[in-house]
Amino acid sequence: MIIVTRFECPGLWALLVLLVLHKRLARDVRRHATGFLGTSLMVGWRTRTLLNVSLWQDMDGVHSMGRVRRHVDATRVPSRLGVATSGGVFAFAGDWRQVMFGIDCDGDSPVRPL
Image (cartoon, rainbow, N blue to C red):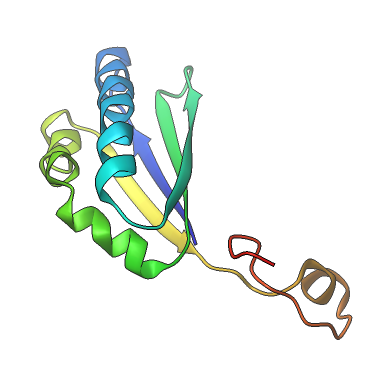
């Protein structure tokens, strides 16, 4: 599963606060959430936008973030800073050959061992 969360900040200060917060949260999520594979942050400095893209083995792992206390507390910060947020879940749609070219083939999710 891929989770993309978008943060549109009203100014540079809010963007910097969110960057620091995300760096601190990554440690706790790695320690306490199951199925977490990694994350990447993309910053649009001119637009004051932060995209957090995280990779998970399955939805159980995504739900396990509810047990990460620092993450639960951090979900309240963006609204206090005037940051608009949106997010989406993107799931495995099939083998790339099948999805792109309609070739009939078996395909396993790349986040699972072959």
